[in-house]
Amino acid sequence: MPTLRDIVAVLDGLYDPRWADSWDAVGTVAGDPDAGVKKILLAVDPVQAVVEEAVSWGADLIVTHHPLWLKGVTSVAATSPKGRVVHTLISHGIGLHTCHTNADSPPLGVSESMALALGLTGIRPLESDPAAPVDKWIVFVPHADADAVADAMHEAGAGAIGAYDSVIFRSTGEGSFRPLDGAKPVIGGVGKVEQVPETRLELVADRRLRAQVRAAVIAAHPYEEVAYDVLETADRDSDRGSGRIGTLAAEMTLPDFASHVARSLPGHHSATRVAGDPTRTIRTVALCGGSGDFLLAAADAAGADVYVTSDLKHHPVSEHLEKPGACAVIDVPHWAAEWTWLPVAADALAGRLPTVELRVSTIVTDPWTDALVGGQA
Image 1 (cartoon, rainbow, N blue to C red):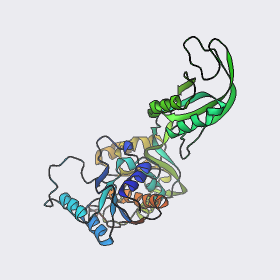
Image 2: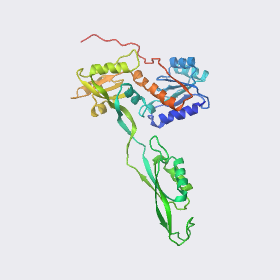
Image 3: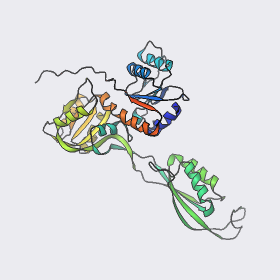
Image 4: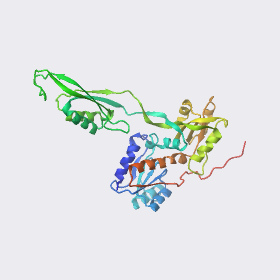
């Protein structure tokens, strides 16, 4: 049976905590790292109703999108709603782990899940994050020691590209050197020029691993003076980023697309608001799961016909629509947009944790319980 520690390692592989915003609070809130986990419940909000569902189902862990706390506290007494959540979790041996802004930008994250729920194709980040800086390593080693040096570099993290590891290119040639006084050559003697058949190893590695890769090369290489190059590669975009943009299989009018959005998201009691010319044709869609007002201008600049997000305010939308040719805007409930991530995350975990039972909570934790339409102008 996997432990909570094992589950967290899988979650961190999918939604690395280093991707979280500096203000955020992600990670494990409650739970024994050595406790076994048979059942995981996924939900948007760590509220009491979700915790009671976990207790009733016999869950060992709850994974939520929203944190329990974003600021420090001095009490977890059960006299407060969040304190009661903590007491219920601990008293029933249930862990709580949060993937918040670290789950917004990556593949299989919140915005990508929302794009998939809307049926978009050609999905890509609306604003790509820069990829982690990468070094190119070139190491020259005698043929007989090439495997040992390559294995040591792989063990240190070199040779990882996307979903692949142990990536390496090898070529052969001849190295030449002359040991001077004081040298202790492994091959040849002092004062004599040597020609040695050597293998050239070429690998890439995250720049943050530079010290440990270098240590691995030096430790595994037979020479006292190791010939190697480290080249800093050009900056590049990653497959992570804020929001998503893609296309619909067929064009729709803005009202029809708004209805499609409402049908594609889980049921709720809140409102889906639409701004823009109702005769406008929609094909290219930009979106951001959760609060995405910061990407409104980016969606327009990217040529989107409509931008879908949550928590938009009057003035930014009004000013946006004053611009000639501005894209339409659809504001959806925050909870409903982010809920689309839960089944995607559950599928990703199921593929990596085949012995664990997973459930997506369908409790509507959107705080808005009704929406009324005012009098017509």
